[in-house]
Length: 256
Image (tube, rainbow, N blue to C red; front, side):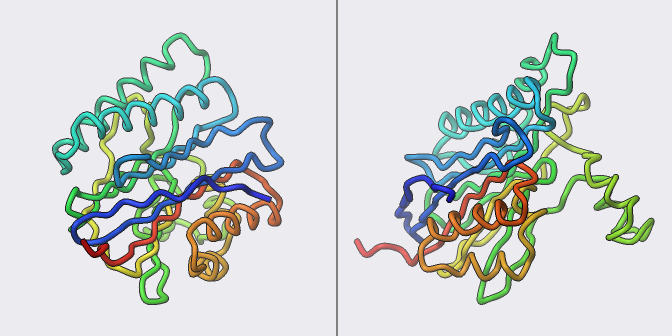
């Protein structure tokens, strides 16, 4: 059974956020190359997923997360596109430096959610195919876009979504941390409404837990239960990948 981390609560002016994360190795890889983060002090959570199963994967995930966390903390309480774009540019350089001298790919995906200090809105940061979902009023929506050749191909009708060609293109990432061209991340301003439940997850979750079960599990009363159930569901499905989930529940503002 998966064991999630301790819930963190962040009382802001407009809302209170409650966040929990967890990760499992699964049955395919000898180690976990995913990196979850739920900040102990700031309304900030993220997931990273190393590409491959070697030292480059390990270095990329650890370096990208350490760099992003350090820069968010240093910039706080300034939160916005200027600060986040600068943070992504620096972590791209950091991951590239961490992989210098390695004969293997050093890269990872990255998805993060950071609330502004007053809780009026949040910012999503997206590189690669880790995802951010929002459950609102019973509707589960994928808010991010996968940066893969498969996503582009299916969108433009080059091949059916369930075709062998789409399956092969699923692992051809067009953007990631450590990419030689250092691409920019998608930045999305999102509302934070009481009752919303956000899920940040690696593809070990999204590839193994279908839409309907994900929606059902995210409706759990406690975010730690949702994380536990999602990760257990990946193991039940075969544990074919490292799997990481961070659940952020939005509550009304605490009375002062």
